[in-house]
Image (tube, rainbow, N blue to C red; front, side, top):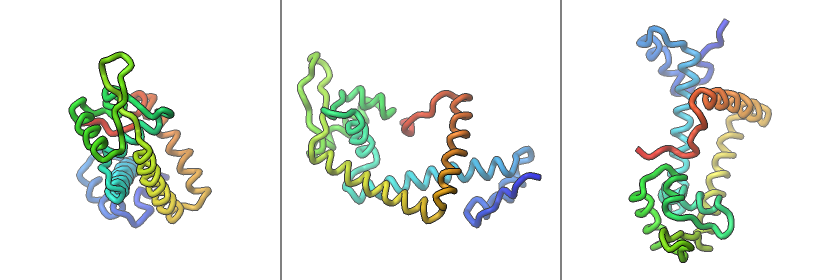
Length: 181
């Protein structure tokens, strides 16, 4: 016997029967899981946008600062490296770098090869990134621990890891960031 696809009183539970009635061959349990994963992902993106705004950043600016922070000392990358890592166009990256530079969060550094001028995360940029990241992780931890006991969260991570591994077997590695459209 398959489990009930609507065990929780969430938005999927409220809509799944109507959806399934219009999808002749859909499995309700699979569809409910897919819908929940997608909605959770979109809500986490909403949380990121809220935290970015509260820290006077755009979500795109924050991802650029994150890429620079992850690069390790001296926290610098060329615009092309950043654009490639974040999956955005050179033009989009140029606009972000300009905005971050004007805000004092990144600074240009001399190019080693004379071509593309790298940018470096400034101390202010590192502090702003750290505060936004602290705010994000605190909110995420609170949301997750309000909804799930520690053992449940461990089990969820194991289940999601298995699902992600299967999807990556089928489609290749998942992109780290949402790709530019």
